[in-house]
Length: 502
Image (cartoon, rainbow, N blue to C red; front, side):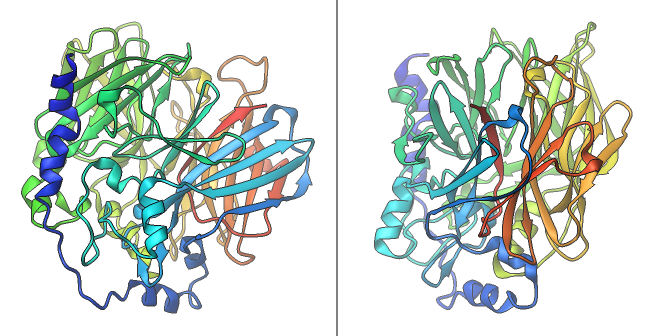
């Protein structure tokens, strides 16, 4: 694609005029969210998990047990952290400026560093001592209209280690480069000049040969950008696809032959955005569209097929693979509708709790030859699905995920391994007094793909108000952690991470 055409479809050439027309809604001058959150802290211990982290952190952890040699390395985790500046508190959990966490594991010691990611947005607002820009789910009186997607960039969702470079990932703009050792922010990643500030998703997929596949969604333009990046970190290919009524897409999957996207019927309304709605509130739920399925040929992106599933919403996909008949099998975390995005993840920011929907594992079959797709829901509450990374795009048997919701607070309290063929689940419960975050699979060196390995992840102790890093044998979760590292402080709840072997 010629450079001028790519800019016309996917870059600031389209986005800037729309943003410049934005007339931000004026909220009430007396914004009570910060006060409500402060007043609720004494009554509900879980609220501590959503406090604002406005400074960098560093400490050695207290160790119990022994971390196996297989997990000697670094676990990086990312998530929203700076929720408040002065008396201005964001109205959505996803709005907080990102903080990267680095857990260095070696010689049965764990050293933690947590650093706020110094995006251009964060630095401007920190210097001003107040919010200057609208955010994903919040608008403030007098906020500046964004001039590009990176005006809103909080770099707060996930992390990718690629050829010696560490990238903090967000949903709607550039990846941000960090120093892998010090976490110092190095600036936005520009894959190519015409891709500056073009959306780069927080859920890239690393193929078995090291190739990185990713996408980005420009909702105002009905554009999906596809990326293919070599294991050497160099961009091989990027292309913008025009997709009418494009949906909010957070994750996707790859197989040997295809890229697979599930598009929930959550559609961007340009007029609502122009007239002052936040980016989130400019979306409309249209279940009559169903859950659209887009299958793209890996080697020829012009070869695309559309199928349909019943309407539903999702954030995360587990994995996908193709059988001998060419049927694609994919699993994802299903909810009936997107209320978690509009309600649950807002309520916590004012110290309130609601659970508007349950998350279940969905198993999908996509028969591209017959043009039909079907799904089955497993009655297992679940989020943050991960697999053995060596099985990306290949047949897998187990999902590792958070589970065990609580009736009186957000989040999950257990980590589980579910056999998606039999539905059998093995889990370890941290107990009602802790929140279990995403846990990831770390292979045992030299083992076959899919063999038992190790599970590492963090949890938030609501009573002691500290964060712990735990390690489990993947096939013996119920036995409990073989090792734990307890920090002397609590980290804000995060989203996604990845492990880098020493």
